[in-house]
Amino acid sequence: MIFLKEYFKFLKKRKKLWLVPILTLFILLATVIVLAGNPAVTPFIYALF
Image 1 (cartoon, rainbow, N blue to C red):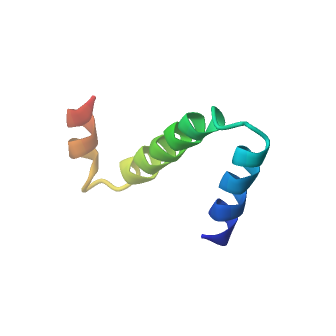
Image 2: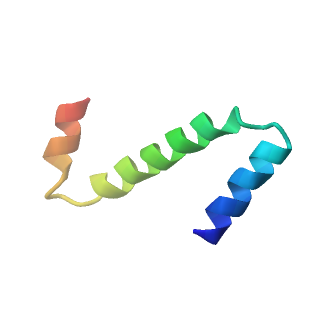
Image 3: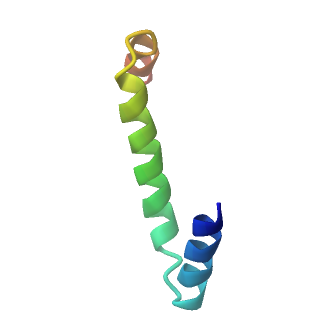
């Protein structure tokens, strides 16, 4: 969690807040990919798309 705090402080200081939505999208996509590897969860993910 310390890494995330420092990362957001960096983004705020450098005025790069436009990177936050991109980072969020990457995290959500990675979560879906990891969950898709589990056969028990796969039918629920296919229902979303």
